[in-house]
Every structure is written in C-alpha cells, then in structure tokens.
Picture 1 (cartoon, each protein chain N blue to C red):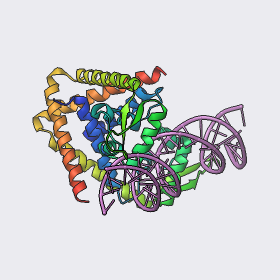
Picture 2 (cartoon, helix red, strand yellow):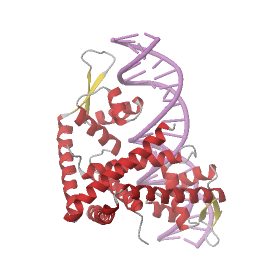
Picture 3 (cartoon, helix red, strand yellow):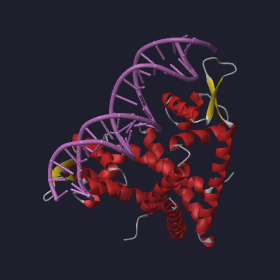
Length: 147
Length: 147
DNA sequence: TATTGTTATACTCTATAACTATA
DNA sequence: TATAGTTATAGAGTATAACAATA
C-alpha cells in the first residue's frame, strides 16, 4: 500500500514536466525550445553543431528548433567570423530577459522545495539523492556501453 | 559549486527517461505506448474514452496509440457488450507477458535504487521525497485552479 | 441532445540520408 | 576529403474541429 520509492520519484518527474509546461504556457515556448535557450544562455553564442552536441540531438533537429526560435524572436543567426560555412546562434536581448527570469524562478523553486523537507532530514536527503543520481548514472552508462 | 537539489532531481528525471527508452529499445514500443499498456494492465479492458481520461490525453490521441499497438499486436479492439458506439481495448496475451516482465523490472529497479541509499538515511529520504511530492502537487494544483 | 470514436487538418519533435557551400 | 547547415522524407505524439453512428 505504501508506494514504492521509485513510483514517488517518477511522480516527481511527472510533476516537474507539468510545472514546466505551465511556466511556458502563454510564452508559446515548448520544452525542447526552452532547453535550447537554457543551453545557449550558459554556453553563449554557439554553432549549431555545438548546440546539437550539447542538447544530444541531431544537427537537423537544431535547424528546426532555431528556425522556430528565430520566428518567435528569441534567437538570432549571425555569420561565423572565421568560418563561412557556420552560423553563430545567440539569444536576443528580450530572450536574455526571459531566461534571467526563468533562472530566478528556478532558484525560487529550489528554495520552495528545500523548505518543504524537514530541516533535520535535509542532509540525509541530499546524500540520498546524490547516491540515487550516481547509481542511476551507472546503470544508464552500463546500458550505453553494452550497445 | 554544489548543484542545487532541484538540479539533481531534474537529472534523475532525465536519467529515468533514458533508462526507459533503453528498456523499450528493440521492442518497437515508445514511452506513450508503454504508458497506455501500463494503464491497460491496471485498469483492465477499457473504452477509449476511459483511457483518454486515465492518460490525460485527447480521445483522438488514444485512437492513434491504439492503432499503433493494434498493428504491433499488443492490444485488441473488441465490441462493447452493451454500447454499440464504444469499443473495449484489451491487452493481448503476449502483451500481458511483456507487461508482467516490465512490472518485475520496475520492482527490481526500485530495489536497486533503494539499496544505493545508506541504510541510516533511508527513512529520512522516504520522508523527504514524500514531502517533495506533496509540495509539488500543491504547486501544480494551484496553477491549475488559477486557470 | 449527448456521447463514442473516426476523419480531416495542423504543428512539434525527432531521425536518417542526400546535397551545397565551404574548409 | 571532411565539416556546417539545409532540403527531402518519414514517423510519432499531440491538439482541435467536424462528422457518423449510437444512446
């Protein structure tokens, strides 16, 4: 009757998705596009090849995402200064503002969630979550290398 | 330098997705279709309307998912015994076998993850995760009712 | 009149392969 | 010859709206 730890973690993952979808609602942005903006904010102006690697997605896919974000005014394509084959994708000023706000909301959500945990449990939870990330990473890596 | 608790939770969510994608790989199944099979396994033969509500997805979407699962031999459409407008969707015997195996893998993964947490931290982690689920659910519900 | 499922239409995400322009 | 990005093609997931059959 007690739900498995795994089920509760999956529920958290699901709730995150819903929370994010809600946060983007009205902006016309999607999860994939926000992820790309997030990567751009941290990496700075980048070639589409670089973005494809950072997002772990095909270069063709980046073309589509950048197309959409260009139409909605979130990014700009500029010529690469030394390589005429390549373009540099960069955030527009308004997107920088949007991403700064999202970053702040991210920090706020972290604070909200941390406060939800009883103070005396926080250290153990930190240790436990870290152990879970490590173990899960191992599992996924093993599966990858088995390919 | 210490990643936020939130970032680690998001990383776990991401790793789950990868792990599941790997588990389905080779079966030709996708996340959405497995989710539908999972729901069917727990709910038993159901109308597409019922499935749409359980999956929180449009009825039209269910039509497509059932079409695909019917083609791959995982589900069957049978006439509803009393309502000639409706159909009952049910798992085929081979899909029942598949889902039983997946359920076992699910329990195994839960065991693997629980063992990764230091025994003295497990109770605190259980309490903490439960608190996180509750708080996140509140946030999403608030956002929903604000709509 | 309301409900069940489907057809019609459209958009996004995703991938591979072929092609163009450059390096 | 290799690399950066695009065009071509394809399939899955998702949604709304219109429609047919049935309740």
